[in-house]
Amino acid sequence: MPDEPIIDSPAGDSMPSPHDARGQVSREERHHAMGHLLKGAIEEGKHQVPAEPNPLVSRPSQLESWRVFKIMSEFVEGFDLLRRYTLAATFFGSARESFDSTIYQAATELASRLAKAGFAIITGGSSGVMQAANRGAYEAGGASVGLNIRLEDNQATNKYVTDGMTFDHFFIRKVMLTFASEVYIYFPGGFGTMDEFFEIATLVQTKKIRHVPIVLFGKEYWTPIVTLFKEKFYEEYHAIDEGDLELYHLVDTIDEAYDYIIQNVQKR
View 1 (tube, rainbow, N blue to C red):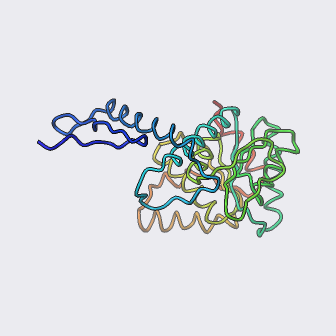
View 2 (cartoon, rainbow, N blue to C red):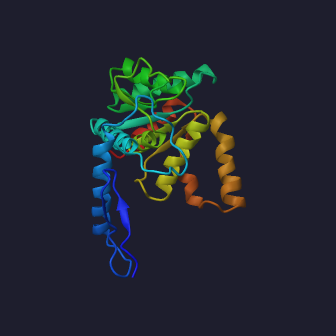
View 3 (spheres, rainbow, N blue to C red):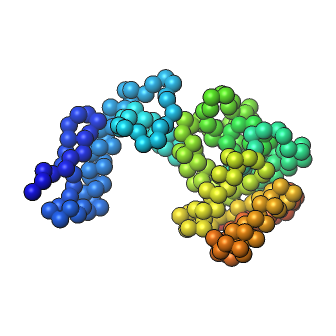
């Protein structure tokens, strides 16, 4: 019979893999084994976090204890921040100022109205649409939260943020943005905005999060995209269900957006 497989721990010791004689493992045993490994990685890693961490690599050859600690600490700090707000609206959109000025004015006004209605306004914390929404919340005297990301070009947090944090890992930031709010509002943007939209739409579609209102603001920008969903994704390729076309709501004015949100948000 072959030797029992082992799991190496960061501290240099080892422990048996939690398999029985038939190679099966219970959930409790697996959790115990992973808990042992995680505890060791966190304890070792908190003393090793470099001042300027290297990017993540595909298929790392070894467990980097400091990175495990950094990931866990970002999750804990992020969730601790979010629990301060019981009602929130998250705004997504371009960090650039390349769209018509009416887009940014609308983000400011909508955020202001929602802040006055008791919503904390949460954004990615940077410039463009994010800054416009934070400004609306700030000037209305509401909670203005920014969940920023540390990038090579030093993406600064805008001056209208009253609470927030900066992440090193995009995927953790996305988790925080995903679980932050009772409504998700998408203004025009680029790859990042599309990524964030598909993340939320997929999580609602697969029931990994409860159904929440998803608002797409700006018909000129969004109509070609939702037409693609209908004519290609659904009608031609059957890659989505008809009901998936109802996951989002397209609006073109501040009043439309505000009324839809107030009528459809389910307060906790």
